[in-house]
Amino acid sequence: MAMGGLVGNNPPARTNGHGGGSGSGGGSISTGLTSGVEVPQGQGRNERKEQKERDEARRTKEKEKAKIPVAASAGSKDKAVSSEKKFRKTVGTYVVKYLKKYLDEGKVKSKDDFKHLARKLTHLIVEKEQRRMLVKKASSKKGRSAELKWNEKVKDKLISFVDEYMDKLPGVYEAKSLKM
Image (cartoon, rainbow, N blue to C red):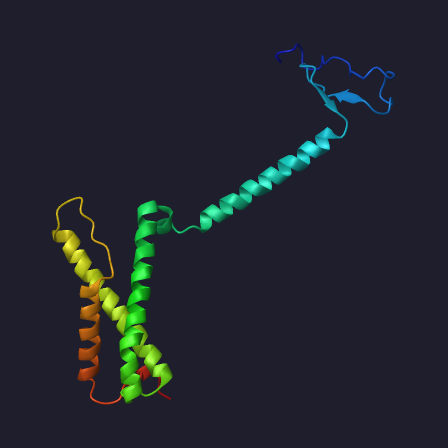
């Protein structure tokens, strides 16, 4: 049984006092519930429209939430990814700076070969530093975190790595994938 009585036993529609029945024009109508809550005419349509907008906003928010990668959703991992990107960018800047002299000397065949070589060396250096940090992290005490940070020691290793790599080349550098 319903709380207000029998199911088909609803009170008659209330009006605002300007006449009686169903053709009274303006005013308010009953919702048909036993609670006696009145809803002004036309408000039901606005409520449906507002509910539709709220539902649409919720769906949009859920879609945006679903686009966030799992690794970036955690705060500390997001910070680590960000610091890695900064480190990679800094390494790339310095690799280009130190490789420039080899381009000017003619040890690199073309501008495209230079770009290829700079990208390749940047990735090699970052990977070497990541491996070094993993070893350092594994051998360190619990609670200490090791992350990639740019400093003078890394800069010196970068310079020596670039110089050694270029000295080992037999002639002029030409990217294999760029040959025609």
